[in-house]
Image (cartoon, rainbow, N blue to C red; front, side, top):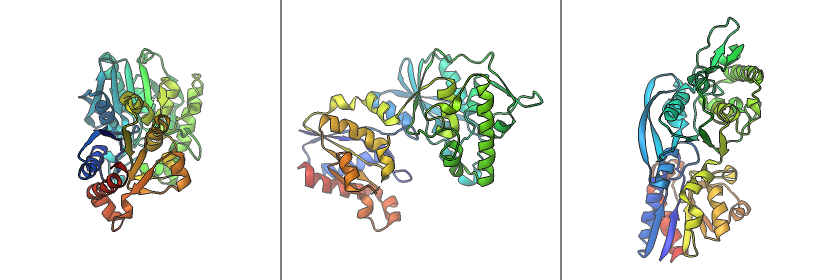
Length: 373
């Protein structure tokens, strides 16, 4: 019996990973009855990361109290993978999509709540903490996270600074005596972002605009981040040198550069937990997809991560995406047998968003009747 593995990313703004899989499954089963469908929730570090890892190992979820980007009390779901391992999403604590764009304030947003959550999980005895590092609305370089772990930042009047990005430019002295010891915790960052902390390709300039920052605010944030880096150097911490330091508004700088977290591509880490490679054989095909397949898909995203495994196992690989903006040469590098875009059969862009579920069913029927029978 043919086994079809469904591993699509979400179609952002339209369907979750699970909904995409459900639509593909319906389309295939309407054409082929003698088929085994195996689907997994897929994410690469942003929204849906907790669900993806929990799905991979049949884990569970638990709720924890913390605070959001503006210090409002909230409850967030944490994925429990085993007795010592948990997974959290930055996007569920200080997520960009938690706030309307008119209410986002990068100068006042803080990563403090992420640090609160890390501290609680440490106290509960978890020793492996996976941190999905996508979709943050903060731009504080992880200063807030560190403050939740008892790091103290002072201005030139030796006054304690509040946990917000506005404080970065005012840091004169840092006291890291008496901080919560995280050295016994294996922190694992799941992220596909390699941006540096500073500069034109850094956390502020690349991602700041989507967090509500105009040109003036961007310059203010960048100035503050540079000051933060310089004062950290006095402690011997070169936080701007960590690969991926610019992820999640500079949270990567604090997690990787200060707390010595290990960084992994989110999709590669998830596929290890799924144990995908060991499950594939000559009687399998794999179908993935995403909202938009383009040049970014080739750089550590979901599709390229899955392609690395299907190529190694010589398993046919298909894509069903919202739209496909890659030439045949690039698709051949991924060894994609056929890439379908629902935009090609939709009336217009709006139709491809609103009716994505039905469109995916129709495309999956075509794929099944053409290649799987």
